[in-house]
Image 1: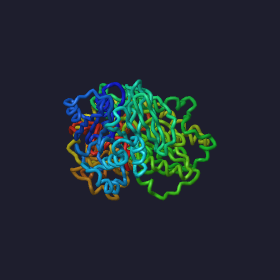
Image 2 (image 1 turned 90 degrees about the horizontal axis):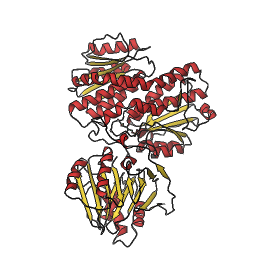
Image 3 (image 1 turned 135 degrees about the horizontal axis):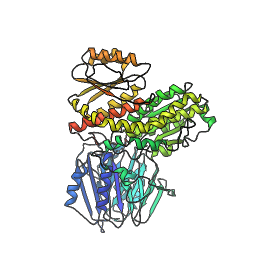
Image 4 (image 1 turned 180 degrees about the vertical axis):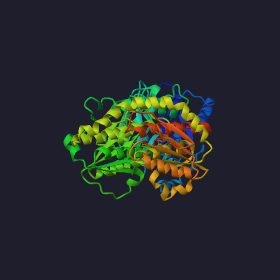
Length: 609
Ligand code: F6R
């Protein structure tokens, strides 16, 4: 949510800032801005509402050879998207870019009004003015001014600050909003997300909360806010350029849907043994004895990560019956007074590893002395660093705002964690083996379904672009799956799509069925098939417009469209059905002409509450 970049070195700062912002545009795309300083500290400030391309137009007329600068792409919190609200914000000699929220900005603003004429509605300009109130005419070191200001601030921030007095240094700090320092040759780069650094350097230092640093082209000096020195740990950036480029695809969303066979292989690598019918996860770091002690699981996530947790819960309950599981929405759970028994483990699920609500839950749960295990994608992210142990899903960067490949791997990683517990508890291998075998087969099945279904789904999707309303229906494991399917259509195609458990229809939502709606129904072979068919018939009898996705060869209800999936899989069919719903959402959105990678009002990585 919002992106920060910074550069100090021998190359053209504006070039890095713009290319970095392009990489981070998925984190916020309301407005963007950069400021660069020439050798005398003369600033060039460029800001524009809307996409980075608008900023690029301004840059074309204002090219400089400056060697230092900072930039920002915004997802508005305080004040509408506009040029005047875009970062960097100026106060006196300093410029500031900021991710996060300054919660006490109103009180601070009242005090600062006497000395600073506010131009924007943002909390960030308040922080700029506050830093400037300490920095004044520049006699006080910039670092000290920043530290003094941050000590008065309540809220979250990742910031980068420059002063026109100091055309060779950037001060950065973080509390609750990520900040990475890229270590280059005669250059230092700043970003809120390592993807902006890919191709420039492989060496990165991730700032921790409460740390502040002065960076020059050859030096990085990190301290805590209490002035204790911090010895920087340099880590390797594993991402390569092709992982953050669209390649042959028109959109990141389609690329990320189509690369699920490979991304799932990365999740499974070294963890699944089909011969022994077992899985092995090193990351959680729990002994067999500790695994045997687990009686409860709490699974915490937001949005798609929450849905992945729900689906994993349904599966784990099937083979580890003596464990109780609760899957919760982080934004609610953080404020609940929920009692967590001591023999619990919490799974903290997050693609970005930065989601503010999920992070707050992690911290709260840890305080209660409960073991936390991360199911995280972004390496080195805050959640990954703060959990007691974890399993990276290793799906590579997810750039499209809508989460797809992460979902599939999160579900499988959590099921593998459940299998690890079940193995330790001595659940009969015959019960667990089918799960392991199907997990191993999934990448191939996913690949086949995607290849076979891509074109047919495109055709079907075109027929449904006229609907503004949709009802997604499923039972049992198909229920969390349709929750995810509906979210996808809602967020990218702006269709009011809601998911219901099939069995709940008669308790209210059935009254909605009319020509304004279509219904997406998942119909799974198995014990509940007959009941699901009856439910489907009830919708058809009321004039429903059903798209049925099924793995039942003989399915013959007169649905408007039937998508048949042929597969030998019996357990993980919902994951295949979800691929169909992902493709459906993608093609509906493209046909409507919307920006499928950057839906309105949203941003990747929700680092504010
Ligand atoms: C939906 C989507 C969001 C995220 C949610 C959690 O497509 O992307 O619902 O799943 O914001 O994000 P992470 O997994 O980064 O914690």
